[in-house]
Image 1 (cartoon, rainbow, N blue to C red):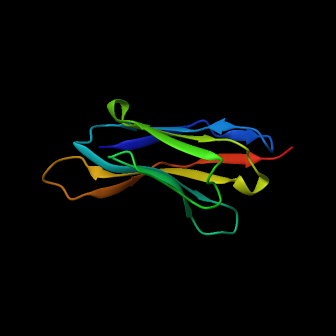
Image 2: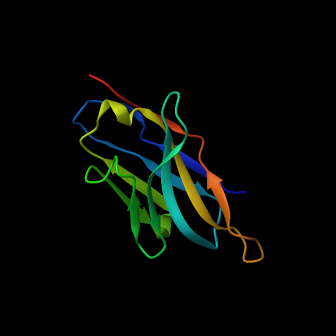
Length: 121
């Protein structure tokens, strides 16, 4: 069984930085994409950033130029570096992997439990 374990959330200052991390416990035979999504109070879950197996990054317009996503394939981990934080970045952040845990299985999505990020002075 695979679980995604997130860490690094908490309170950040406007203009400050936070770095989240997500690591998979359990074995993937392949991971096509890793990413982060977030859900702000009263809003729907939205994409923050993804990184493909080939290293291509995709960012929401709201975080471009401020957030950088990277992945460590050897550790099955993904890290968003969040700089120049804004109060509107306040949300629960969810880690997401798309991959296979066995070659006989279809590609599936796996989600972390979520970590709270609050940006406030």
